[in-house]
Amino acid sequence: NAGVMQNPRHLVRRRGQEARLRCSPMKGHSHVYWYRQLPEEGLKFMVYLQKENIIDESGMPKERFSAEFPKEGPSILRIQQVVRGDSAAYFCASSPSQTGALRDEQYFGPGTRLTVT
Amino acid sequence: AQSVTQLGSHVSVSEGALVLLRCNYSSSVPPYLFWYVQYPNQGLQLLLKYTTGATLVKGINGFEAEFKKSETSFHLTKPSAHMSDAAEYFCAVSYTGTASKLTFGTGTRLQVTL
Image (cartoon, rainbow over all chains, first blue to last red; front, side, top):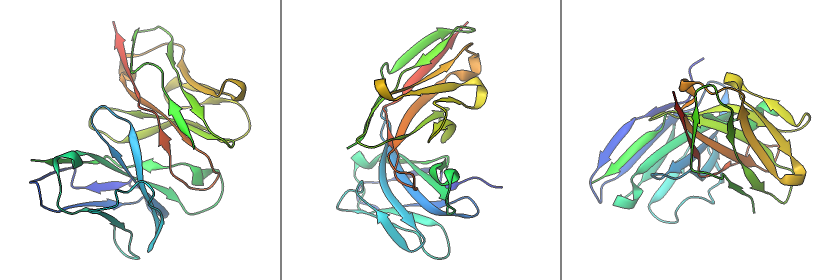
């Protein structure tokens, strides 16, 4: 069973460009979470999605950031007009759809390291 | 609001010595508690979790943690450190039983010396 997949692993963008980060959850998982890790800091929650729905976006910056999880295909985190402060590691996690203890466990991908020059 | 405090951003132990990484949480409702490990340039791997039931939780790689409600703590321990344990460790809390966001501490970098 393949784990959570993220691509690209490394992404370099110039200020003002757009960044698109992709996340494919584990097979059978329908919950996706995005977290951001700034240098020397812990992970900060950004957004929680289920298929075609944003459940909690309380951690998303109000501007330039958006996320989606379509019925088909990976979840996308999109950052428009990137600035140097967006440089960070972005992690995706997924969890199962069934109820029970397993639903509390999030499985993390390897992350995308975004560098804005 | 919930929060997690990890005391000590860097901890150094000798190989074979006891590992103790501290985590205290703040939550207005019963928490679900997690410890994750992160190796350089990799994602997070779950070490162990507490949801309900037994307060002493055993995880992978010989790690265990004890949930102490009276102290609002969930410290991570391992009796004997190994060089391969060198990594960053994150404590996290989720306050509902359903899939929800994790709130992470700032992490503790564990160094293991010969």
